Length: 238
Image 1: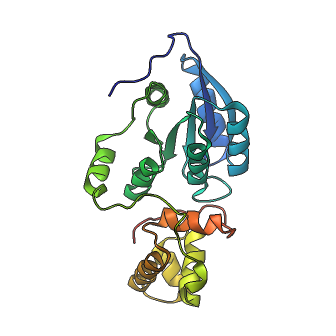
Image 2: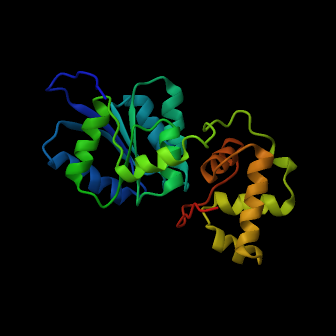
């Protein structure tokens, strides 16, 4: 894939939105020390601050954790805001490991790369330079996820989603716990039901709302003003 030509001395402006403040500071410090020509225009761990920094600086690249301190899916909200802004900012989604659904929804949402924590800062530097040049940063495992699912996935598009008032009380309870970042086993314990029952509730919720994934469900709830608790460990298996 051919990238855009950039002047060799051009400094790359970068927005960091990490899962927590300390993590963002560590990444920012490491990038500044790695020798590449990066200008970190802002480092935050909240949705509102990330959007404010983005709108103020319109950086070349945004590195965004899927989970921020103020919500387990708020990184995707930042991604959506950037994609609808018309600004040519390349987004890299940052996650702990290759979670199939998170990887796929990152690329569906417009990310140009997915970077897993644990890899070296040198690789993150290379990732930033790669997406800035107009190319994709994608591992073999991530590419397999995309190839496996691309023919079956619907676009990540929420404008046609239906009203949540059609859900039963128990289905609404499941939605609330999903938006809190709880995994299926925890939801089952909370509601005193079997885990397969939770999966069945989710299938019915997706069908009623016209959605296809947990990410879409959380974004749908957020778009309607639902509150989301700080992130728990998130399991995305249905």
